[in-house]
Structures are given as C-alpha cells and as structure tokens.
Length: 207
Image (cartoon, rainbow, N blue to C red; front, side):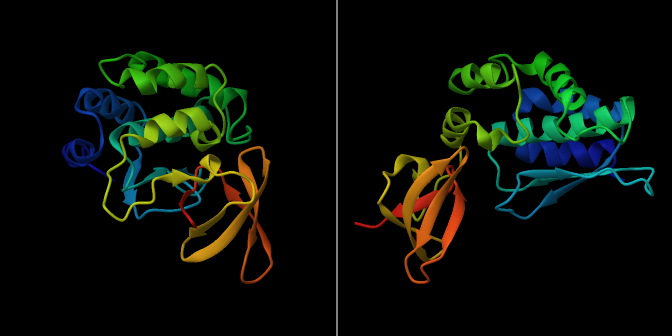
C-alpha cells in the first residue's frame, strides 16, 4: 500500500496544490492502494470493491488535467466510503454514493481550488451527480479548457459537429448521425457499420 509521503509526491504532480492536504486526509480516514493508470478511453478512474481484499484499490488516468483528476479522485473515494459506510450491496451510483460524493466534494467547492469557469457548472452538476462527469457536456467542455494541449491535438468535440458532418476518430472516418443522450449514433464510412460514440470524443473534422 502507498505511504503518505509516496502519495504526497504523486498528488503533487497531478492535483491542484491547494487540494493536496484534503486528498491526503481522505486517504488517512480510509486507506487504500492508489495507482496511476495509462489513459483509458472508456473511463477516467476506477474503483471496484473486492470482498477478498482488506485494502481496496483506486486507479486514475495519468493524462487528466489537475481539476479533472481531483474530481475523479473524489468520485472514486466516495465509492469506497459509501461501500464502507452502508454495505457492499448498494447500487454503485445510487443515493448512498451520491450523498457521499456531495459530502466529500462540498468542502472544496470554492474558488481557491477550482477556477470559476469550472466551479459554476460543477456546483450545478453536484446537485444531482451522474455516474460519470462526462455525461455533463457543459462541465466537460469547461474542464477541457485546462487539458494539456499539443500541436496535433484535435480540439473539436463530436458534440460541436452537425449531423451529416464527417470526421476522423482514431484514424477511422465516420459520419455524425442522431444524438442519443450522451452518445451519438455514427456511421463508419468504410464498413457501413454504426457505432455509438461519446459526445465528448475529440475528433478531426473532414472538410
């Protein structure tokens, strides 16, 4: 399991400085094994309660910006706290988790921690938090402003395109179709197959 000093070094690389002490305090209340993961397209972080383990494990993607990393950390720690407080039989994103997530995030919902452009949609989001912050389009767009940019980055979100627009994603060409909640039904041009793609997917528009 991680030591406090080890965690402090990790947090120093990934979290807003003003949130590090709070995140360490949460770990001390209910210690867990913490790991940094490679980027995963399907999730930002992960926690799965294991009956056969006394010490549970939380993982978070290494490529998140500090504010997304912090939000994901609190999200996953809330899972651990909820299972510990209530039972392992609760709905993973049910009322117990929501209330725990709100309780843990409330002390740091302030502009000393989050920039105001994130803080406004985040406060609204936390009134009824969803299973994934990626489902909140406005919040994710504000969060993405703080992503590390590179010259090859694709700055458009799928949600910014119009139906019928063609775009590249992971080297494959698609045509945007109808939006279904947080995902968009898209046609892969080459195969003729349809796929549901997240609205927040970064894409490159085909002219």
